[in-house]
Length: 457
Image (cartoon, rainbow, N blue to C red):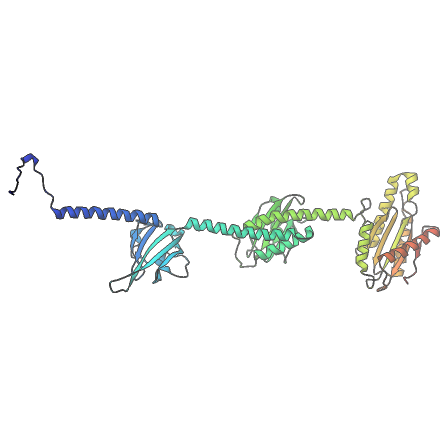
């Protein structure tokens, strides 16, 4: 078959691309596309990639800026020079590592947490030639995880401290237990509560010897109700956190560490701030409870102990009756209370009762127990007193009452005495019964005198 030829007019003719040039262009395009694909995928998978040589120096870095540093300025620099406080140098390893976290210095020395994945590179002879790695900046995730873990630890600690406070038998025990547990949990030398006092500050419930300078600092901060962090005497790390609540309206939680100990981190301060509110509320309740207990055991007219409080105190002083101290019990009865009330009104009778209370309070001193036992009856326990001393006390009381000015409602009373020998076995009930019987004898004998009960059998 003869070959066919076609003639082309000049305007239909075009240049012919040589096959080799077309192949080169196609290869160049493929390389550009491959490079772009590599950069896109690498950028999605890591914040930066790198290679090091056998000496651990950066030999390749991408992209152009690494942790704020210019990549060109890092080439030839040892990778380990960017590490911050790392015990083990991951760039000195000879095996693959995945997701190993280290702290590295960013621009300006700013610490960054980096997750490294590394693989060793071998040369043509199979010798170690360096590392190829991918890095991801996980500083934000690390901070969030650290904060979450710290929050869990803080919550667990506060829950444990709260349990200690809640399971205490009394508010006083709750305060003491809470302060002790807080001291141990935070590694403190001591903890205490501080409230306003006559000399600036009153320290309550201290779990250790209070540093001399704490009171002055606490007094100043209570005046301003501002929290305080610093060092006592320039060496003891200390903290004061305030609470506003029920009386005492202002209180502060104080904590201090040993000289040279670490200061307070954010978690310490968060715990102290929360416990200042908790223990401040407990302190307020403890004082309210103490006030109520005092009121429950106090006669409102005279301010002396009432019958219940006196019996409790006397029973505690005498113990089980088989041992206990020597002492004397005075049982006094106002002979003229009814006439005073009838002739001058109950205000006059109240004056006589308060006068008697003051006389008994002075006779009791710092060791005795005086009480309004009920109505016009009063009791006085004199620990360690002999029969002679008890008689002298009774006679002094009767004489003092008789010496009061005639123009005022003065008490006149009879007194029964009962003495107790050490180890006599005489308990509170027996002692009171003997003193009451002696009082009856004194009143039957004409009043205005005293009688001594026979010794216990």
